[in-house]
Length: 313
Image (cartoon, rainbow, N blue to C red; front, side, top):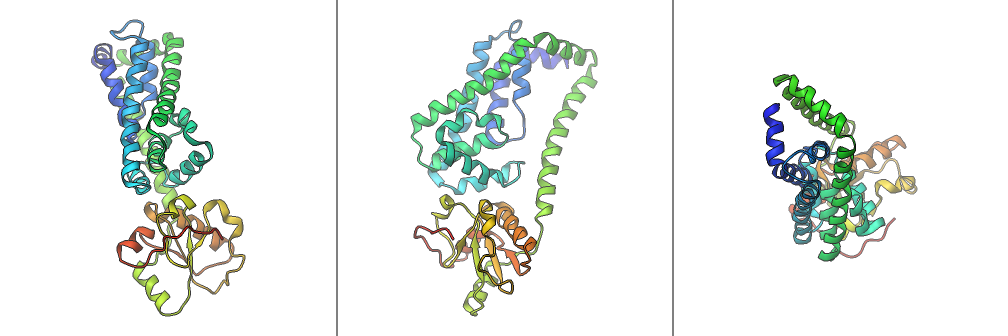
């Protein structure tokens, strides 16, 4: 443990840069505690609080710009990739998109305080065509607010933090093991939240080939697109209705309970479609199934995709 603190004193800026960069890229490695500790050490270490702030801002900005250009290059598909590497529930994409569309680039000022929001907000900004200078301005200010608050708190409570560090040093290897255990518990908790979330939405899926057979066989299933209008702009299954998780009060207004209802989305594990399917089942509809693979699997199989501006049901 003492060796680690010596490394922090000598190479604190490099460690902070890597920690912030990796967290903003999407890995479950929290950087805020590191900023608190280094903020408390700034008065005695080989780095200043100003240098620490600039380093954290640089790490955050570089990571966010990576997702910004990824969003600009491949569009909204990047959001699905983000959820695949994140331990946050897949619904974070939907919530983040809704917030960004309401608030705009100014949401970047506080997005780093919301777990899972920062990288998704950067990708959204790129996918939505936000100007680069606008993104850099708001993202840099947001990084300054986020990192600055941690550094300030660390300097204010430096005595308490240093006492805690001294106690961990006195514990020797047990102190290092305690820190490692805390990180492991944090990651395990995030994984458990995701596992429990997915377990709650576990239900039978229908394949894209089976759905196509139902359509060609004249069974006329009710097909529901649960994505947002923004995501639906990239194409949807012909004849689909549009009901998202924020429109659950419209469920079943004119749908026969005996009809087959197929729901799809574009998120991993068909999370949004499964959530809406659960809501249908709670309202007495039991012939309800999410489409395995969602719109991506449907398009990849070569089936027809409509691309005219959708009209909400």
